Figure 1 (cartoon, rainbow, N blue to C red):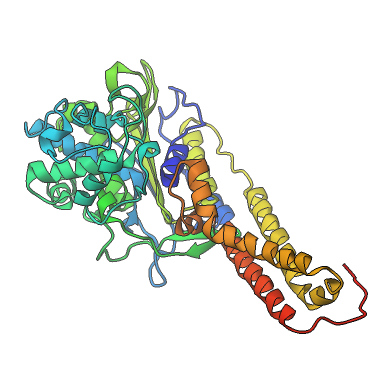
Figure 2: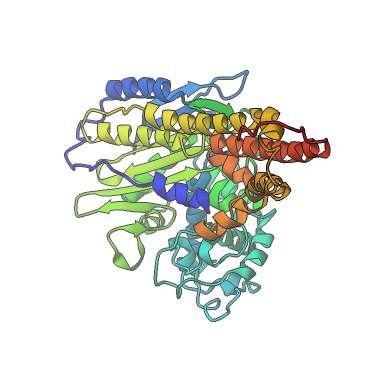
Amino acid sequence: MIITIMMILLTVISVPLGAEAFNSGPDLNAVDEFLQETVALYRIPGLSIAIVNEEEVLYTFSSGQASSAAEVGPDTPFLLGSTSKMFTALAVMQLVEQGKIELDAPVQKYLPEFQLARPEYQDQITVRHLLHHTSGLSQKGMPGTTFGEDNLEQELVSLRQCIPDTPPGERYLYFNPNYRLLGLIIERVSNKQYGEFLNEEIFRLLAMTSTFAGPEGVKGLARGHGQLFGYPLPRKQVFRPGALPSGYLVSSASDIARFLMAELRAGGGQPGLLNPETVKATWTPPDGKNEGYAMGWLVANDSADERVLLHGGALENYQSFFCLIPQRKIGFAFLLNQGGLLPMLSFNAVRDGLLQIINGEQAITQSVRWPVIIVSAIFLFFLGIELWRTLRLKSWLLRTARHKPWRRRFNILFELVGPTFLLFGLHPLMNRIMGDQMDWSMLYSLLPELFFILVIAIGLGFIRGFSKIWLLKGKLPRNVQDSA
């Protein structure tokens, strides 16, 4: 789906990382200056950042309003999006530690009801395949939406419609339901709710006191935003309980800092709160590959002296990013309460700027004016056309008085076809072209400017069409010059 595409785009790193950087730690003054400038330039409504090493929090930054009554701080909770997956993967691996899950056991061992539209591969998909997104399942094989059902059991039922795209283990295909199945496996094996298990086995263990399984009842949650013509647009985030393990955990920068520190210590072989072997397993792509999707972490660069682990998350109104560079014993995370296509620019700016500073370079802040100007210009252009066509209604009857009746009727038909197509035909057409389940709410979430101009075009189109029908009920004026 579109959110999946956004998540993949968010994890693309364009900044090369040199092994010499961070030997003496990041330039925190440069970080602070860069973030202050970026928040102002991109009008970011809320941002919280933590930079850590394996022993301590090196730097925190918070900016914006969590709500009308509170400012964003290090403990302000945000929805994470797909960075939730690393906690799901860690929980699965803890159950592997306890001997309750076998990585290479088929999913049907733990979920006997697991079925697909074509059964040839359903008994071959393993827990490991789900963790690595190599199950062979993809959005392409789903005839319906995979935004998230009401609960995990319904997610299992919805996959009965799924047609496998490739044999299991053959290819990496990022597919959110893989991790929803893992969440259900956690529940079946542990005899606990997914959130209850994570709270007991991970959150409490790491003293993550502002981390929760879903946004319901969370106090102080940073309010979500979209963006309209470059300005923050407050919006309510939909919570989809069935997608909790793949994208709806809630946490704060201070809690993610604790998690990253524990990961660095364990990944470095130090005994501590997390099992070093378990953490290293979550950092390892399948089949000994140097790069690829590990278990909740994407290995973007792997060599003898450098490994970069990262993951991005995107919901309609939130974005997040976690990054670890184990050889330098450094990591950072940021949480942002704004989502959509244009806000990806601010996400990328924060991510790339931090990585540039980590690399010992000067952060480059690029202007955001042109994308906003282009979108605004397109909006105003089409708005002008719609208003001009509507204002011409006053003279339409005079301009068509000498036309033959069939031409007037065709004109009215043509007037109504456009808005009718936009209202009823655009959705299925976009789904066919994009292989996705696009709907009006998703369009509003991704690009509200396009949403509003389409709504205006549909409304004014129907007004013009029905107004012309009403005008024709009256008597046509005689002996008028056709001004068409």
